[in-house]
Amino acid sequence: MSTTVSVQFDEETSAKLAELSRQANRPQSFYIKRLVRENIDRLLYENSIRQDCEDIEAGRIGTMSLEELRKISDVAD
Image (cartoon, rainbow, N blue to C red):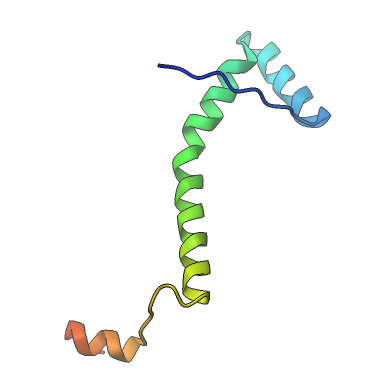
């Protein structure tokens, strides 16, 4: 199943995309799909880290000191 999404680019990005498309004789949609496919997992990971940081700062996720971690994991210095 596929989904259609509409996006708007600024002039500079649009020009670069058009040039890339022209040089390779491929449709712009090919590169848009490729860029999304190759970067979406990284962006999701970054957002999850950002959310974890916000949750820690807000006290929604507990933290422990390195010393506490060493005690419960039996790890030496």
